[in-house]
Length: 253
Length: 345
Ligand SMILES: Nc1ncnc2c1ncn2[C@@H]1O[C@H](COP(=O)(O)OP(=O)(O)OP(=O)(O)O)[C@@H](O)[C@H]1O
Ligand SMILES: [Mg+2]
Image 1 (cartoon, chains in turn red, purple):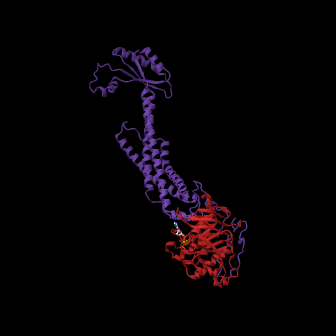
Image 2 (cartoon, helix red, strand yellow):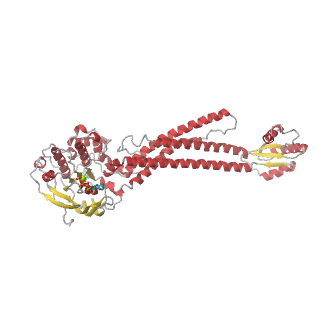
Image 3 (tube, chains in turn green, blue):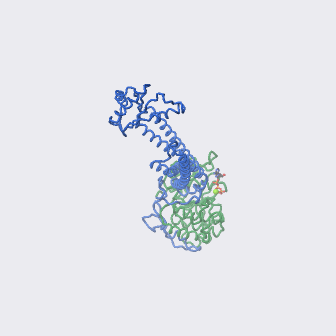
């Protein structure tokens, strides 16, 4: 696999004919790396993620994903790539007429194959792990914000994507649950999933440490936070997520 | 290549093999602790986009009864109803005109027109003796004076056809089916024994009848064609409405990597059902109307009203109408989904 797993070169982004809200974005995500994406509200975190999950085209620059240049790729080339990406949307985006189980099972069904029974077992296990044991058959409109968020997270990770993008994934849960969910991401990351977590929760970022991509005025800057004396997640975890510095600052000059 | 390489079952961790869970939050989420069962290598079935891949299991990303129950089946029903009526009339017309033309094309009228009553009768007898001996002629029947007069009455008025009026003698000749008769030669032959004989094979009539029949059929075909294109347009319209009503769900599916073909599959299936539903309703209504009309016609009796009985082929075509409507609706949905989604970014 290409070590240029995800690569942005001087990327700009705008909505419609508006002004560019992201400018000169350059970075590389190495396979298996873990990043936080921070920035004030409205800084463009969700927008940058949109480029990453191939929902929006850059207005300039080059985006390559999994070694393919997707800047101008035909839309029929995208589904194959999208199936390798798990996304936790800021606004969850669950299918309201399906139960939590069915929502979470969808990526597995989309991937094709796998018998129903196995899929179900697998999904139930994960939902139990995120604390939704009793809400598995509930439909999203009857779930609380935090419950929906956890369903969205379960859906994003169920197929063990190559790239996981989580937009404010802990915004609606209590700190205890937030740590548990972060642990889930870390666990998945250890298995090789490149992860980007957009968040406001600087507390959590400091706790986890690692490379941080920071958006300000449409520009990206990066720094590496030292790991702090931490909470239960990593304190008792001998195998910390692989949070090596992977941002190539040479590209962003 | 995905890191859960199917050739290495259970072989997680391209980089980092799973390590023993030692965190303080309970066990490692088992979904990541060595499960490969649900991971299959090929994104195969979901990615296929064939028009007729109805067998593919629905992913139910649209609510169960969405896209159904609206006005579409009604409109399709009305369209098929109109189509049924137009087809029945076209078939019936075709049938009776055909019968008529067949009968007529086997008939030749011989008229003996002379004012001299005795000569008229002599020539008629001579012609009657000659005609059946000519190959290709099945029989020759002389219309009685009463019958000949009856034919004139509508033009001259009852009672005005007096006995002394020199009514031409008419001989109806029936040719054997498929026989090719040269009218001019036959006329010359008949005129040798009956100099005042005129022959008419209704040729001009037949040509006109054929022209009328053909034009009526063309019109019926045009009507059916127009109705079908309106049906396709309505189906396309319904598809577009369905797409925009479910745009959010479709976008979610796209983000998860669903291909357009998968979306089209869902729409195709539902629209086909609606086309079938409406089509069956329309056909049944059309047939009921036809049976009622046929009943009224048979009550009038006589040969005044053309028969509404249909050939087996016509019946088959009628029964195929709802299926055709379903396929048409399905195709319109398929094409519309692909065309619309192509503009989704
Ligand atoms: N669909 C859109 N059309 C036009 N402008 C948009 C759209 N979505 C976002 N924007 C604008 O782009 C900018 C960046 O928005 P974005 O949602 O990426 O910010 P964010 O960093 O995710 O914010 P938050 O932390 O509040 O989620 C904002 O100024 C926003 O108003
Ligand atoms: Mg956002």
